[in-house]
Amino acid sequence: MLKLSNICKVNNILVVVNMFLKGKKIHLSFSTFQSMSTVKLWFDGKAVESSTTEWIDLTNPATNEVISKVPMTTKSEMERAVESSKKAFKLWSNTSIITRQQKIFNLAQLIRRDKKRIASSITTEQGKTLADAEGDVFRGLQVVEHASSVTSLQMGETLQNIATNMDTYSYRVPIGVCAGIVPFNFPAMIPLWMFPIALATGNTMLLKPSEQDPGACMILMELAKEAGIPDGCLNVIHGKHDAVDFLCTHPDIRAISFVGSDAVGRHVYELAAKSGKRIQANSGAKNHAVILPDADPEYTINQLVAAAFGAAGQRCMALSVAVFVDSARHLIPNLVECAKAVRVGSGDNANVDMGPVISEDAKRRILACINRAEEQGATVLLDGRHLIVQGYEKGNFIGPTILADVKVHLTQLNNLLSFLFSCFVFR
Image (tube, rainbow, N blue to C red; front, top):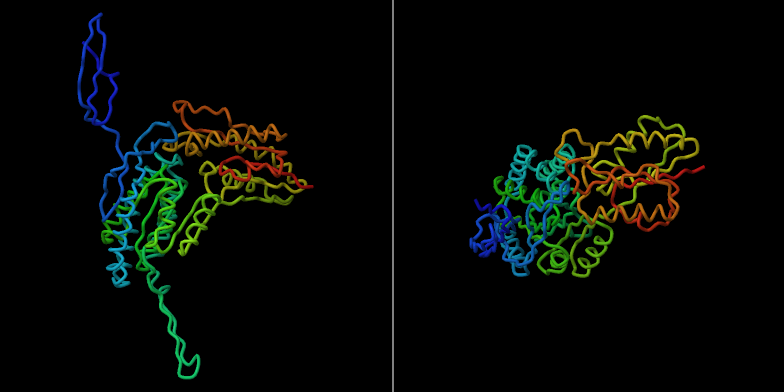
């Protein structure tokens, strides 16, 4: 019997396979019916297949298996998203505050109902543990709940007799179409920082989630639709630099909210400001802990390890530098032992403390940084470079790594978002 399990499959293309069986040449033709799933755009309250010819692989960081394809949204599709947002703004901005408030309240209820579904998507696409992913959703939910009660923050002010026969009045009014640019590390929380407040105050929003994990954002769009938020109030595009630049320069987009790296944050801020937009750019940080001699040993060590290695260090508030003052340096061996106990593996395993980093490229950058630091004289107190997770040998895993004697001006460390932890002793 001829087995076809090794025949390649190509979407919507007639494939001709030449095979040999017992010396006989067989010509086999077929058209495939099983295709790779694609991430959709979100226009006018529904998921829409992109017409692009350029796609980005969406991978599971624990396996590096391609699980879907993300479209590089075309220029015409991005224009369509803006037009949809503009059209919806005319109606939504004139909708009563109480009605808007009720829709946001409905959304909060639905997110609470589907939090495990959203968390599962985050773990699959981003790699963080399920517990951490649920925290991602919960922190975003808190903002949604706040957005459902912002009526008092929308009140204006009046002042009588500021001058003879003159009173002043101020009103808070919706600004228009807003855009949100979301990073990979909190794919639910950060969109929920952005669009619920924008909607509650009468604006519409065009979102660009990270191309590395857009699934959570797309689920949130479905829930917004179910909550009764009108079509066009929320739209979603995908892509990389071109999509970001489009949002920053389009004349009909009035405000930009960005969270991401320093380099991209500077670019977004400069480009959006030049285009006359309101812009808030929340970029990365380099976080330090100073450990004094009278610090409680057990509490301090546990907090350092959690802050450094939680979420695989892929968060802007991750702790990357610890400064031990005088006799506090004696805690460093305890720190190393505690970090050794961190269990690394696939995020869907309930017994795992830390998942993989987001991509192969991120892993390469981290490994290169460790190697460079070691070449410049750093001492590797705990080395996670050679970690292999059984059953996930192709995953983007690195074990907790702790360095000492690091050169202060090592530029790679200054720009790294990872769970690479440096210890300094101050005497």
